[in-house]
Image (cartoon, rainbow, N blue to C red; front, side, top):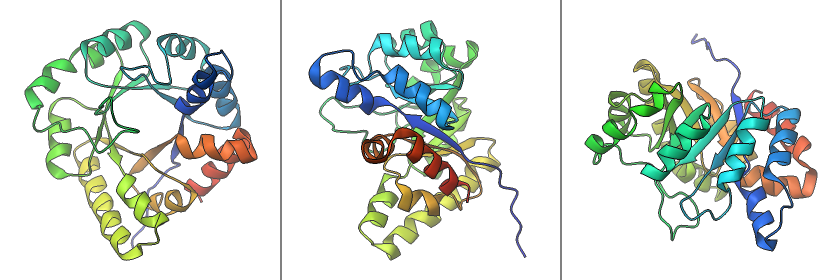
Length: 248
C-alpha cells in the first residue's frame, strides 16, 4: 500500500482585488494592507501581491507598506522587467514570482515561457537569490519548462492550474482528469529536481479539494475567489474554510 509523506499545504492569499475595489473610487479605502493583516490573523500562511506594469490594482506604496506591516512572508508577483527588478531589490520581499504579463489581458494567461527566453531569464534572475530572495517561476506543468526553471536557479515552480480549474467548474470531469494527471506527474518531476511545487490561478473550493491530493504541492496561492467569497461571508470565514479544505 502506497503511503504519503505529505505535510500541511500552505495557503497564500492574493490581495490584488482589494486594491481593485479601492481604485474604482480613487480613494484609500478599502486598504490592501488592512486586508492582508486580517488574512494573516485568519490563518493565511503568506500574502501575494502582483505589481503590474500598468498599476491597475496594487501600487508601489502598497508593496512597501505590506513588507513593513506583515509578519508572514510576502510573495511579490511581477513581470521580468528592469523596473520590477529594481523594486524587488528595494523592498526585498520573501519571494519573487515571475509571471508573464500583457497589458491587454484581464488576468495572467498561461505560464512563463522560460525555454524560449532562457538566456534572458538566466541573466535577469541572478540578483534575486544574491539578495536573499527566493525565486519562483509561474509556468505550465511541462517538463521542458521545469528543467529550464531549475537550470536558471529557481527555488520554486508555481504551476498554472487554470485549465484544470475551469474544467472542474464546467463539470468536464474526464478532461479535468487528464490535466490532473499532468500536474501529478510534473509535480513529482519537479520535486525530484529539488524544486518546491506551488499551484495557482483560478482555484476555488471545488478544485482546491482535488488538487490538494497531489502529494508534492506545498502551497496554493488564491486571490480572486477568496476576495469574492469574502464579500458574502467575510475574509476570516473563507480563509478558515479554504485552509481546512486543502488540508482535509
